[in-house]
Structure formats: C-alpha cells, structure tokens
Image (cartoon, rainbow, N blue to C red; front, side, top):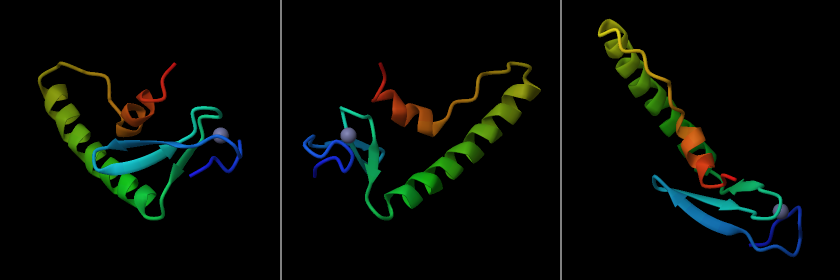
Length: 80
Ligand SMILES: [Zn+2]
C-alpha cells in the first residue's frame, strides 16, 4: 500500500498487540484498516481502567507513579 499523502512511498507495517498499523516513514502518517482504530480504542480503554486500578492501589501505598499511555507506547515505534 502506498502512502496517500506522499504517493510514491510504500507504507511500512507494524504489528503491536494484535493490531496492524500501516505507517509512512516519510510523513509519519499512520493508516489503520477499518476496525483497527476501534480495536485500538477498546484496548486503550481497557488499559486505562487497568492503569487507574493500579494507580489507586499505588496511591494507597503512597507511591505515585507516572501514568503510561498505550498510545504513547505505540507511537514509540515512530520515535526519533
Ligand atoms: Zn507519507
């Protein structure tokens, strides 16, 4: 699949946690198949709930920790 923006650049595919992500190495555009975004958001919601539970527990233990985002993990693969 070619990048709809760059035209002559072939998208690279990355698979993260069962979700396929096509991304453009040129403009860093991210292209998801229909349904992949929904899956991603579902997973993100689940992850947020898990993190909130964890944070609650940690708060009680007085060990605050930085919240991590599932999306930020995904975007790490495009990191500088
Ligand atoms: Zn592109």
